[in-house]
Length: 197
Image (cartoon, rainbow, N blue to C red; front, side, top):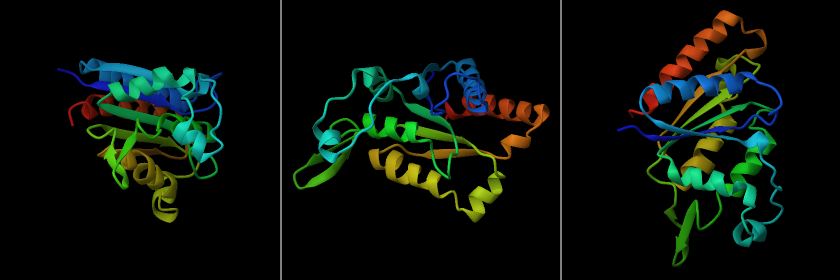
């Protein structure tokens, strides 16, 4: 019996096929070949406003354009997020998407005096796939992958998603076709393996 797997594409430019999209397609192919049910969300194609206040986040209505996305997050058992590193972090569009869907009452809920008593997305695992211009080792060891750690701890872990595994794809500006092909093969393999763990 396969898993329910959700892929979230966080590259804001939906008008062209970037490396992030090709990596996602390879991962999806591997996951489907292992008998999993796969759904995909492309944040770059969705139209939604940016949240501007805590009150709006806590009490506002989820935009209708994100209802299917939130439903898919609830449906899945494993998710994979794909995005490029922009100014050392995820693109603003992806952050705005996560802020919208990870609302109180859905992603977490309080009880008594503890506002974080229940993690609404517990029982799900995740993989974070990030592309970047710098070598991945430089980002991981010199910059300590600070923004990825923040995503894993302060967003995914905050709502109960664990374990979270990461794949950093560096030096994309100088990547040869052969190197890209190796990454596609690796993503296909991860798509198969993540469904078993």
